[in-house]
Length: 218
Ligand code: AMP
Image 1 (spheres, rainbow, N blue to C red):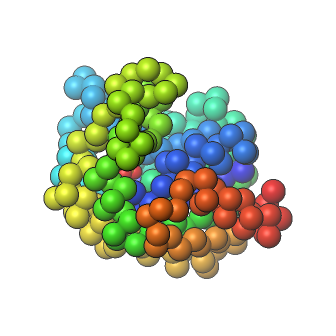
Image 2 (image 1 turned 120 degrees about the vertical axis):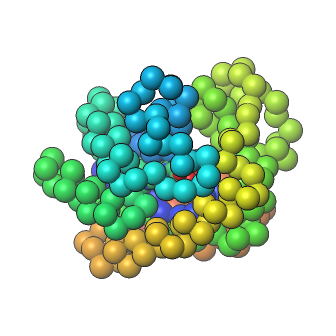
């Protein structure tokens, strides 16, 4: 199963990707996580090319496509992948189609998380992440450490108001066009509207499950 999660930063792609990865026994491929790993390793050959992350700008298609191509070779992706934050441009979407076609596969489902700006800002400005397992939390939960790893939760460097605004602009300019790309593709297209900050990840998960059932995907 190959699922693409579309949606702006803070829309909950990472959280839902984790759940879907367990449901379908498919790997969770977050390009943001893969690129941040490179950003922490000064000796990595792609290190200079990922610095734009700090400004909230997109890394080049060439670099991201290479990172995904290499990532998909890992054993956790043998049954499929849940793509979180990829593709983000039409050129990446075309590259993904080619990578999957080379394996005799295609994008099966696209889940578009359409979240209002108020909810995005509330989530991103309060977001905390476990640096080890990458699980996502919110400061309203009052946790200092990851309940699974016991490691101190941190804020992402790009979760500040200025960079968030830039990232939302990048989404509107470059990624929103993918909605049409996938609506016109054979993939099952599921769009969820989220305008209420009190809606939990569990609520969204239930809605996704219902919609996947309606489309006979599960
Ligand atoms: P994310 O964790 O998905 O919010 O991504 C964090 C940052 O990594 C983004 O703001 C971009 O700078 C970069 N990034 C992640 N995925 C991609 C992608 N598919 N294409 C280009 N840049 C990306």
